[in-house]
Length: 184
Image (cartoon, rainbow, N blue to C red; front, side, top):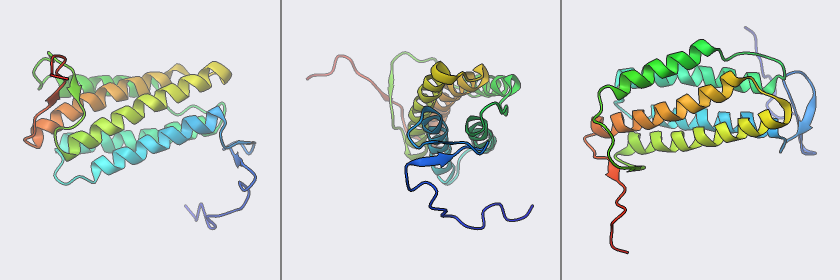
């Protein structure tokens, strides 16, 4: 494959618009740009998590696959009418979620974000995944979006929550439990 981007700046966005993958131009604050921009932010947050040393191999491998899929999702959102995320990928997230969750004790309390550097980074990625899901739902209400995208993001945020629990234990940290009865 040749050079895809030979010039990084084009000045075409200086007036507040950007080009979609189909060549059309939209405002930079459009619902579509907000949706794929937040998916990109999520992908970047997962990149930060992957930069934490000594992640368990199963977590690292799973997150690397997810990064590629999120890039594909961004393409689907950037090109109206394009399909890139499948129901099988949603099922793969569910299977990964079940596999990681099987190793954990049952939850009895809410968990506050934290537990170690990797666990905290994973909680941040989870929160961004929830925002990405909200942005895609906003776009879906206005223009229509395939259900696989919202399902994928919903399962991904659940998977990131479970991974954060796994990582807290891996880092020999503890989960920070929310105490509803604490002194105020």
